[in-house]
Image (cartoon, rainbow, N blue to C red):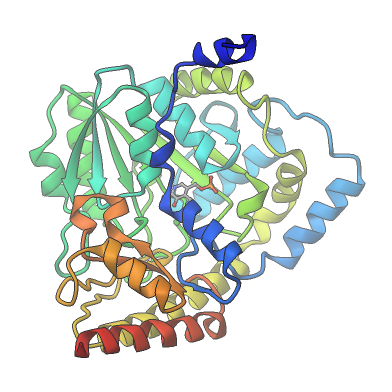
Length: 393
Ligand code: PMP
């Protein structure tokens, strides 16, 4: 054995490499097959706001290319607090409650790292975004799941959470609007959940990165119910302004939790994207017209896509309450969503198998709608062709 081989043999694997996200696998497959059309996208494929881009160019040219403080420049945290007051009826102290992060992803990592110790019980949604599960699993948490209610439209059933809640649970994760089902927690639902968790001393990890995409009723944030005492919010500009590549988001939390998160962040990323912070500090106050435009685009797409999918033989698809994805159920034709996905791939269209999001999602597929409809339509044509042929077989 060479010295290098010996050195490598001493590295204990920290992660199981085979468990990588199927979405990343689909991305590499798409690169290898340029003829493939995708409904697997997990991001906004529409243009970011011009005014934000202009502000970013000014920041870039104006020398805003150095480190910022770990928590983020005061101007952007103040703009976030004003945004949260305007949209969510939140009362935030930008100094004590807001930490700028490298996307919602870093906010999630930091929150989980500070809240969860090995063996702690964490309650997660099923179906739910796979990364929330993975992050907690890697920290050694005991994972427990609450089901979303499949009928009529995969809503977040607060009773299903409360039934599983006791003071021994450390954290309940909520994702509203949900990836992958679009479920949105109602104002009444939030109120009941926050009351119960406050009483029991349980933390709520609230992933609100799709906040701008609620379709059936006005969006309610967990921040509408007073200061973030037992709530840690994961937020992001990624989906809100179609800038996933900027890697800029924020966390909102109780000052004691936030200080821990900020100190931990120093050793991971030191600070968040400087140019983006300066640009958003300027732009956030003027963002309402864009937010309305993006919501309209996605709502319109969602209605058209759902109508088409639900009209296909053997497919059931309810109108989601929000989010970037339709979540059709194809189990009548083929119970295995892995097989469904493979057959659709053979037919030249990529989707994400619902089983990736948990056992409750088996039999369903995640279909992205956040792109101009002209881009989605040809992929839907292929989807339709494949499903009709398959149903007749
Ligand atoms: N939360 C959810 C539910 C998501 O779907 C994503 C991205 N797919 C994120 C957080 C993280 O997004 P970002 O790091 O780009 O803000």
